Amino acid sequence: MIAATTRVAGVIGSPIRHSLSPAIFNAAFAACGLDWVYAAFEVTEGEAPSAMAGVRSLALEGVSVTMPHKEAVIPALDDLDVAAAALGAVNCVVRRGSSLRGHNTDGAGLVDSLRFDESVDVAGLRCTVLGAGGAGRAVAHALGAAGGIVTVVNRTPERAEAAAALAGPAARVGTVADVDGADLIVNATSVGMGADGQLPLDATRLRDNQVVIDLVYHPARTPLLDAAEAAGARVIGGVGMLVHQAAHAFQLWTGEAPPLEAMRHAAVAALAARAT
Image (cartoon, rainbow, N blue to C red; front, top):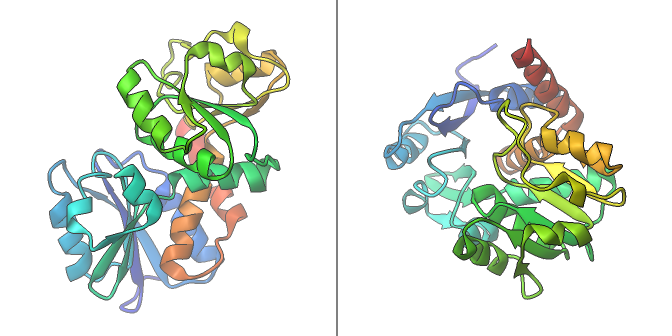
């Protein structure tokens, strides 16, 4: 039951009704027996500073941040963690007293999903990241920090260069041909979300000794994953990153170890309900 003692967190974005975060976090709070509740707040573009003032004045424990506010919240915060500062984007805000600190847990979520769910150690792997938007930059940064040898492929060379610069001195800008020699391929573009069957690369470049990740989690099976599986590659959808980035936020807010199985089950169940 929600009571006067209940602590509140949430997610801000626009549009926000599609978010899986309430299902994931409320399942986590319940699994840990915490008197917390998580809600979704529709915050229109340009209102991020007002939303951060609301976090302070209403004493919310923190908020997840999604589009279009990941950059816009930064001037309203007091501090940033290393990843958020490097990326210039925030997906999690933690309140301590009246102070707000911004974090970016997206890239760490991907690396953790590989390590803990798939037993894949990124160190030394040749990693090709497709896309240099917010997700691509976060992934490149995290893979480089974890010891991966990163190549960024993007239609706009300048954006690819900026993303590669985040991944360390061994990173570089590449082309789709770099997929041929990659150990790990990450699709950080939106290609594959629609019903048109599009692929972000030429499927003939995929091999049976590769790990192919699509950050798209709805649909759970994308054209890229189907093509990669047909080529014999190991395929991974986007739910793992979604759950693990949320797990980081859960631990930052509550100080508790995240109940990963409960969070994963909630995410999968919510996606299954959406598909019916």
